[in-house]
Amino acid sequence: MMARRMLRYQVIVNDRPQPIALQSDPLHVEAARIGVGVHAPHVVEFWAEGSLEDAGTRRLFQVFGTGHELPEGARWWGTTARTAEGLVWHLYELPSGAS
Image (cartoon, rainbow, N blue to C red; front, side, top):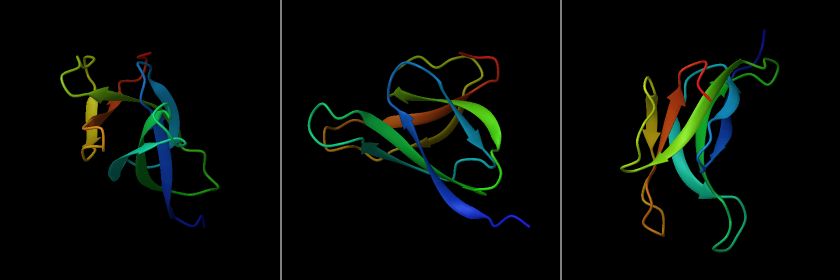
């Protein structure tokens, strides 16, 4: 039997969908940065249950800013708290076949 764990994932804030293999749906989202300084990339971290032994199913995620156009069929998973810079990010899953 595979042990279930709470696992953390990151989606870089850019204009591209990013594939992530998951075994369950996202449960919580937060804003973060990779590194230190004003040029450190923004990311949305999210947590989901899973197992280290199971690769999961490939799903496409993308981060959108408030007011940005959303693709048809995109599913919202969470909104971050406001960052120190005043930014708010929204995590969406794109339908399979989107890119």
